[in-house]
Length: 467
Image 1: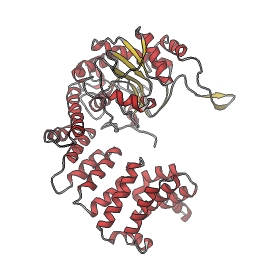
Image 2 (image 1 turned 180 degrees about the horizontal axis):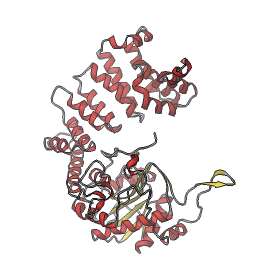
Image 3 (image 1 turned 120 degrees about the horizontal axis):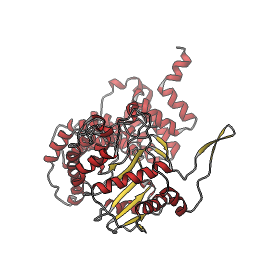
Image 4 (image 1 turned 180 degrees about the vertical axis):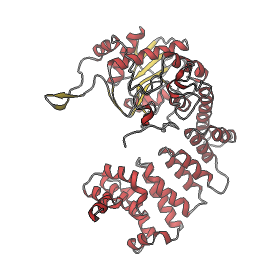
């Protein structure tokens, strides 16, 4: 390899080139993959310059404190002798504050390294470890979060013990979650209400997990229960784990790339009228399996939700009404809950009797603040059927305009569309209605019974995604 090629492949050189080009998003993506290959001062310096480019002055100041603590007189000398540099309380505090700023600015995955370094310098400070565990949790590194807390030499406080139980669930380690929850007392003191909600979240997850674990793991659903995800809360039981963690029943697993990294989720998908109609049909299968008969369809105010909500009202022959938080016995329909206003999501977290929340296209990489009771499919990015689309025109790819027809007209077309079940690439085990019905029957007593919580992790079933 030539020296030029070596330089081009060097992670620090690449980071500096991206900074020089002003591509801050690319810098962050690069550090996410290659950050651990940089010396700690270089890692912090690159992040500092990226933060400066974004105008994040508090993060810049925190990075400057780290660099000063690591090498108060000569940064270059510290870089050369980093392995021999002693850890200090000052360094630990600076690294902790910098990691905290990374978490606050939405890059928890880049907070893990400085917080881990801080914990190594001050292993007896529990606050550093709980922040490290929080950063690991947000980065979907749940076993690392558990290890960070269990590495503490002392009795863990209540919140840290909750973190262990919660992350054990997200890691798919049910025995550890059950053990830690059993030892987690009812909280006391002025924070008991807030902490009680956290404890209840774990309790509800464990109840749902116990129900989902009873669903047969028969491969391919040959016994009518295993389905395309294996069942039994196995390593590919996407439907089971989605239910255990969020309380949502997943209608459809992706029939593409199942054994090539997707495990039932989509990365990018162009939705269609036929697929939306199939989702409404499968929603009907779920409702019928539990004998649920909502009296109305509640419409959320964003256009996409209004369209599919009106279509659902036509499909189920129910009156469509505006969403009201305290309305009971209603089917609340959303296309993408991330498009809903914060006050609506806050209201949806509190369950009303007979209220069922259906979301057509759930973003599994950025989940909504209120988890749906029924999920059409899990995707990273989606183009709704009536939105803009890319078409080939005269040999060139052009973006078409969104459908400007009134929502009622589009909904009428959708409600009248024949459902189509996409067979996919033929590599995904079958998932017929009988499998979905059997799953709902098995978990039904624990469904629609707890708050609709925010769960920011996909859990123990991995899928490929775009960074």
